[in-house]
Length: 303
Ligand code: FUD
Image (cartoon, rainbow, N blue to C red):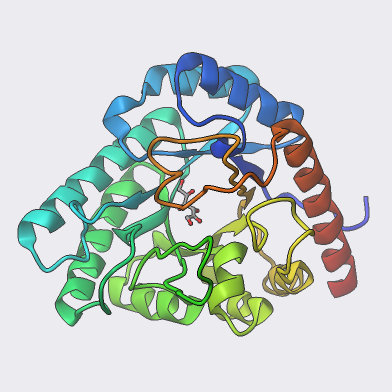
C-alpha cells in the first residue's frame, strides 16, 4: 500500500486501565490488540508492585509488544543535589529497568532524568550533572539487557492556568534534550518527543523533530487537550512531515488521558481531572486510523 511503514504503533495503557491487576492487564492488552495496535505502553511508577511474570505472559499470549515509561518523584530524583535523593532515584530506575527487561520491553522511556513534578526553580549545574551521570550509568545496564532509554521532553509551562501540568525543569525542548544527550554521551540514550508537550514548548514541531534526527527514539502522539486526535490544536501534519524527513522508524504511541480511567500513580501528577472521553475502544480505534492516515500521507508527500 502507498505510504507503507514498519513503525510499531502503540497506545498508552491508561487509555484502557488505571491499574495493572491481571484482569486489567489482560483487558488492556486485548483492547489494544483489537484496536489494531502493535504495542502497549505501561506506566512503571512502582515496579515492585507490578507482576512481571503475569505481564510478560499476557503480552506474549496476545502477540503485543510492551513498552515501559515512568517519571521520577521529588523524593527519588536523580537531578537532585542531595546524594540520598539521587540514590533513591537511581534505585527506582534500576527497578524499572529490571521490570522492563523481565517483561521483554525494548524501550524504557519517560521522565527518567528528573521528577515528574513542578520545580520551584531552574535546574542547578550540579543537579543536571548528577542526572547525566545516572542516566549514563543506567544506559550501560540497559544496553546489556537490550533495552533502549528514551528521555521524554515535557513542559514546564505555566502558560495555561486551568488544566495544567508542570513536569520538569530540565528538558522542556528538543534542543535541551540534544544538549543533554551530548553530556550523557551514551549511544543507548535517545530522545522521546511528545506532541502534547511540544505544542506548549516548541516554536515548531516539525523543526524539533528534524533537530533530533537519528537521535529520536520514541514518539508520543497526543492532542493539545489530551483527548481525540485531530480535535485540538496540535500541528500533526508538521509532526509527520518531520518524521518522514528524518526517516523515523521507531514507535509512535498514542497517549490520552481522561477522568474516565484513573491511575492512582499518574492521574493526579498529570492533573487529569477533566472528562475528555469515556469510550476507550472508540478513542483508540479513532487514533489508530488517524495515525495511519496522517503517516501514510506524509510519507507519500515526502517520497
Ligand atoms: C506526562 C506524559 C507521559 C508520561 C507517561 C508515563 O505528561 O506525557 O508520557 O511520561 O505517561 O507513563
